[in-house]
Image 1: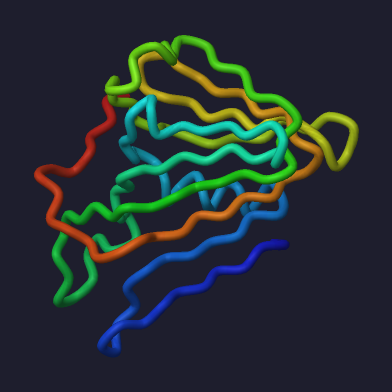
Image 2: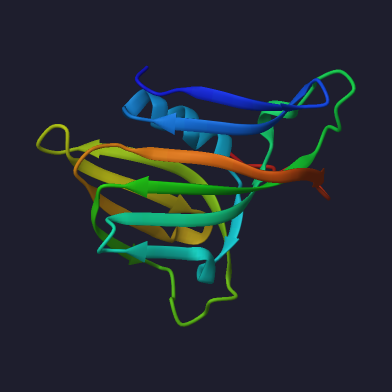
Length: 157
C-alpha cells in the first residue's frame, strides 16, 4: 500500500478518519469507507485549472460498526478529493439539478499508460463520474463530529 491512514483523537478516542490513496489498493480502501455516502449534485466540483475534483458528502461510518461503546449507525461529514485530474465526465447525472441526492456505491481505477488511468465513481441508479488522472492521488477527510444515522444501508444481491 502506498497511502497513509491517519486518525485524529478527541477525548482519548479515534474520531476523524483521514486517508490518502496513492495506488489502486489504497483506492479500494477509500472506496470501502465512502460506500453509501450521500451527497447532492451541487456538492460535486471540478476545477480544471487546479486539476482537482472534490465531493462533499455525508459518509456512512462503516468502520464504527460493532465497536464497544460506539453507536452502531453513524454518518459523518467528509470530503473526498482527487488531484491531478485531467478531465471529468458524467453519465446519468444532471448538473442542472443541484439538489438531487446521489448515493455513492464504489470508487474504482482502470489503468492506462502507467501511472495514468481512469477513476470511476459509481452511484446507485446508474450514474457515473469518470476522472482521467495523471496518477492516483486521493484524500478522504472527515470533518466535525458524527451523528446518529436513521438506518443502515442495505444492498440486495
